[in-house]
Length: 233
Image (cartoon, rainbow, N blue to C red; front, side, top):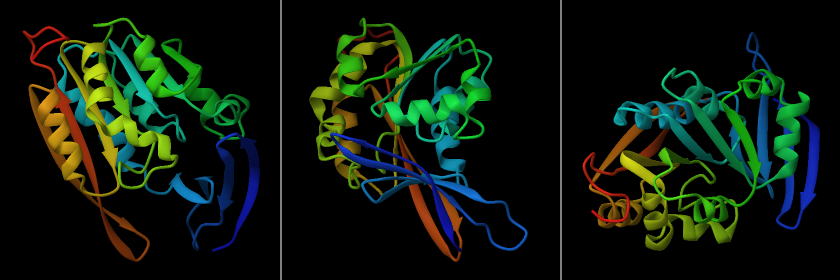
């Protein structure tokens, strides 16, 4: 299958490239996003991005305010907005170009999704956004900024899976809230850290078929007990 580049941007972190990949006979073309040559995601297999949102939404009784770390191609955001309980969805994306492509239709489905009045797109580092947010101001935080802790898009993202950041993420939550993390591979160290920070932890494996091969993706969910303050277990 061939592909053509439809957008490229450079930043201090390197290059971001959006390509259109020709589909197999009878299948539509796909968009593919790469950062510094590393595959981030495409529009062929999006079930786990959606599942990240669905699992987290199902675990929280009142997910009124949701923060998403990582815009990607917008599928996690789309799933969050499909839930009528959600009143506010803040999407934090590091790359201005990706936000621009979503807004101007370079990513075709982008303008329709972000037209939802509940959406606010913020160009920032998710670590800074979490640090600056008021404690107990969100019900869900979804992290989809890498292919998981073992496959970082940027080396600095390693801190997002460590105790200090996850404690700050916990403080962001209202009682009964949760943090969900998408990973391309099993991440026992992440599970251990989440267990040290949250009242309870769930891990789910998702089996997907990519072309001619089987893949296994993982979703990690750290939950804050309904009767517990955000600053203590």
